[in-house]
Image (cartoon, rainbow, N blue to C red):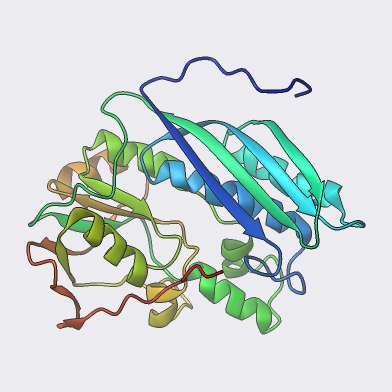
Length: 277
């Protein structure tokens, strides 16, 4: 900090770079959550993009826009908490005045060894899995709106999302063919993976988190669990087990027909968070 640019040692393997913007009132309701949570979510969601490719973080730069009177110390506490917990040091950034509070995070990471896992490698016959039950974040927002406290476990899942870094690295080591994080909802992100891989899918199960609904699991978004596709699910589960990670859950199979995208024998509509201007 203090120089015009950060100086990093060379990365190992491939270099990963991703940018996320988190805006108060869009990604977090200021009437329900403290400003600190905006900073945490901004860093955590950006780091999750590295986890989605099997990477590990090296550093991040953070740019904050805010109107006069914003409690920047509170915002920065959340940023620092997420950076510390994900072992992603903040090495620079910028601050400017604006009409809204927004946090732009650019993360840099690396994927040693076999390289990054893309969305585009799914093949017919592959098994589709997720790293955990879905819908916790959406259920947490619903519960908070109904008066649940900030320390309610589902509310915490919404305000303090956790990127699945260890799981992403384990999946890469297991040789998964395709992977992405579920930031916008399974019902939308599964279509994105299928589109990138030019395949279809048959969804056979949607693991719904306790106290969440099926609709929240399919389209709630911000779960940040990983969606993984592999030709060897037993190897994937064995590697997760050997590292003390939760066993991945089978949810379907990849099919050759790109138009075949079903759940309960019906076409799965691409429901989830749609980014709009």
